[in-house]
Amino acid sequence: MGADNFKIQIRKGLIEFCVLQIISRGEVYTSDIIDELQKSKIIVVEGTLYPLLNRLKAANHADYSWKESTQGPPRKYYTLTKEGKDHLKELHLSWIEVDKAVKKIINTKK
Image (cartoon, rainbow, N blue to C red; front, side):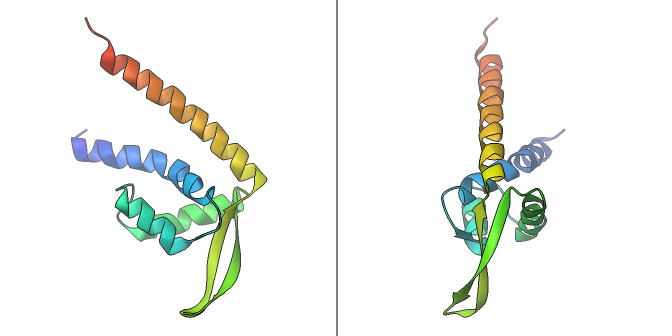
């Protein structure tokens, strides 16, 4: 596996965690999620986000509401559900475990 493929696979594994983390801060519009993910280089293509948001909604981890916009049609704003908050906590604990394990391997000297 090349370095580029490695980065792609890592990002794919982390995108749900990152999206839930962004939504956990409060009501958020889809384009704001996309902007933050692109700035942090987690995703480059916005088409990646929409299927994930649909899966999060179907799993009852996220919900949305429509809000009127002064710049066009109503916008869909996402929030976390109770189940989503619990799921995010589980993912965060998993991230801590994986991060610790990788750091341990990286820092082990012969």
